[in-house]
Image (tube, rainbow, N blue to C red):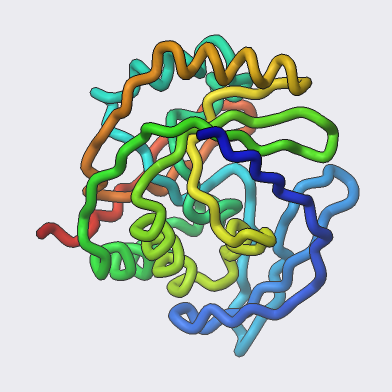
Length: 228
């Protein structure tokens, strides 16, 4: 079943978020010059905080040995194929790469409080954007386990709450392509359905990823989940 999920863009408002584990405060705003969502650092108790950036993320990255069926679709239909590896974002945007050493212990402790689990990619859905274009994506299941993981990580770093601010909350998804119209979207979905077979892998660690300028994302650190 194909579910039509519409995510409406919502304006950002300035807000104070207290990251208790780091004892710091960030203030979020939109930089009108480049349209990038960032967080302006303001000191709290004398500690200076960095901004968030779209050049880093915390994500589920499937093992490389299961990439090929996903990449076969993305290579043809995903304009972000060169920039992103197959992934499901959990915290995005995230702190700059230069701050990874500072936040790694917090994220590592949070991830190890969650037991490793299997993820299955079986269903295909899409987001319809206000412009009329669409993003087609694979549904990672179980939704409840991924939602719990994301909420645990966000609780450790509350400033990185962007993905839970949509009307429907956090929606885990692995993007495989874009379409400019409804007919193009339908053709893409049918092409995917004709060849896609459910794929399962074990999630044993989450990835801290980053990129420089126009370079592809790369994994900087792995945060293991609790082994069971």
